[in-house]
Length: 114
Length: 116
Image 1 (cartoon, rainbow over the protein chains, first blue to last red):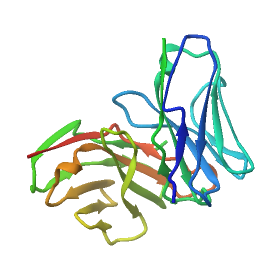
Image 2: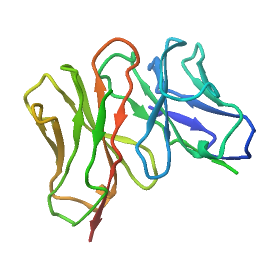
Image 3: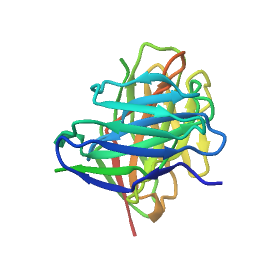
């Protein structure tokens, strides 16, 4: 079975631009979470979605938004990019998004903002 | 808020040796889960081991085992008979068991190098 997939692999943007990152969960998984991993640090939680509804949001500005589609894939959007948004963006899927479920990660999208 | 601390930024051992990675956490929750994830240089995060806090028995997965000390809020990972493929960043993570967002709270990571 295919694991979590993310696209694109790498992305270069300039300050002020907008970016859309995409994620497809493991088949049968209904929950998707997004994390930001700045170089040299552990991942930080951005969003969790379950059944197309936002279940939770981390401490990120409103420039960050996301959505989940009927096929459970998800998009992360970031507006008005800042240099500090440069990071590895990880998507993780889990079966039902219930407490304690293992989250399975994709390979990530490396975003560089110039 | 929960916090996770990994006090060893880097570790290096010889192949076949045993190595222990430290992790402590701070929480007021009584029901929660703890995880160790591995992130090799290719960067895909892979689950190593999962522990349920209400279970006294320490989790094991082949060469990987944990020492879970709930009272001390400590969750260390032991890798036995280390292999070159174990070279990676290792992250300790916490997840509380409750309603709402099921988010992982990660530590800063430990970079482990296995030398031939």
